[in-house]
Picture 1 (tube, rainbow, N blue to C red):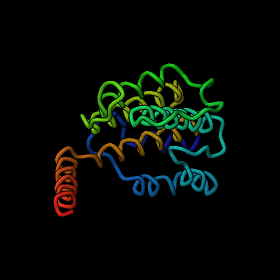
Picture 2: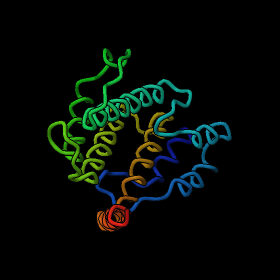
Picture 3: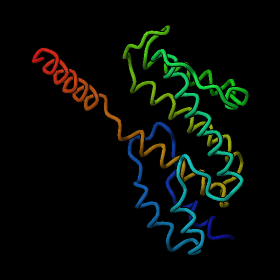
Length: 187
């Protein structure tokens, strides 16, 4: 059995509904004694938006970057800015376009006018979409390097998700809005 088997069986199972997950640093400390030094250095380099040398992570990075590009494109449309003309237009995946479009609509409103509706819900929808995508990409891999890389990405997505707080976001929005009102009325 590989070291991946023992490591993967000792890690807690992740689900998108989890609200309490281990930190990435704690995860790395668990991995350090269970994988080779080379693999440990590779694990430390895995980021959501960067390919880290394997075909699987290149595939993930392509998906993530396409999603980010589509999000930028949709936001630009909502802000009335001209969309960029490049090779990206021809490689857009319809499912990414549809999910991002729905999330942007939830966050920024219907039509072409920019209005703030529920950006937290939109962000959570996008995170869940990414989480499901990584699940599909992992497929039946359970105790190998690909499964471990997928676990890293899922853990990063979940750590990002638990950083969001509707109350904190609302308080920050009110603070910023109040500051803007003060600036406007004082000028």
